[in-house]
Length: 453
View (cartoon, rainbow, N blue to C red):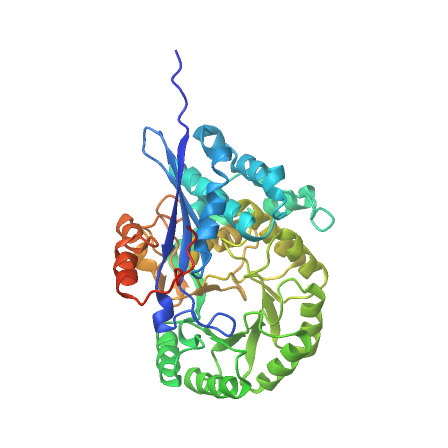
């Protein structure tokens, strides 16, 4: 008599917020007071080995509760699924979530619901990697190319990338994979740091942190720009004097500008040799990015942090609008969609330099870049993962950077598991930190942090 297969028994959600705005960590021209937050999800199971799947999507405070509510709306697709089936084909969950006809009306494949799908899908991949006993990057890199192709939704992108071409790219990417795995485990994957460059930091703090970044082995830093041109000129001059000519300095406007202003502002900073200008305008403006790229060369144009799905990435690539493609592990619909985006980048020969500024994003996106290196692009040339030294201590398997390189994770999973004591302390509004903080803070008639009842 066969035993009942293990299943997903519950989808637990948490609104977790950290008070980073109080030190201006994460501040930029569009987001001056972010509280780094995670709409966190745990797939509970009755797996006899006790495996669970952990995932999240990133926000910056108010509205995190809306994101949590969106994740809860997906529970009926997940609870009761046999975990053997789920882990053998995470794409089946992705297809069901994206294909929900009523929830799809809220997108489709964009915004709060799509980010919620990404959190749940990423949790499923975390579960699959844990059950396989491998870090996610290695699970992906060692998978058969045919299986990886089946994980990708080619709808809307097959005019730029067919399944047959994707298979060819993955088959070519396997050559030398074992040697690259050994090199990755030995040396790690190159990173760059934004830690010196938050817009709210003083020049003294910028100087200290930029000098420390170079001492720590980083060969690239990034500065937030876009609020005041005179301030940006002064800050870029300061950073360039501190790091010298041999270190790349990127700039990031966080969508602050229109097309004409973006070109003018970037050219005004050209004397400081910016390596790229990031998110110079709306992430939805494909033709605007192309126009900016033409006007600011040789400064490169990078975007992707807020690009909502593979379709927009496809168009950015088709239009020759970007030099650097920036995936985000939690913005789109999870690992499956990021596989599609990585394959698109490989098809167009555009390097991928992921965004990883928020809580837990470094932990997640390192796996995607490492898979890309080992089993797809085969190179780290002109490729770096963003690193910000914030909040890693809240994760069971935190990202580790040594000598400017991400150390390859070795623990099974997607590095998404948050420490239980951190969840207890920073769950909003009833966690230990927030309960105390809100009890002593001046209160208005409505909740100042904007939680829904």
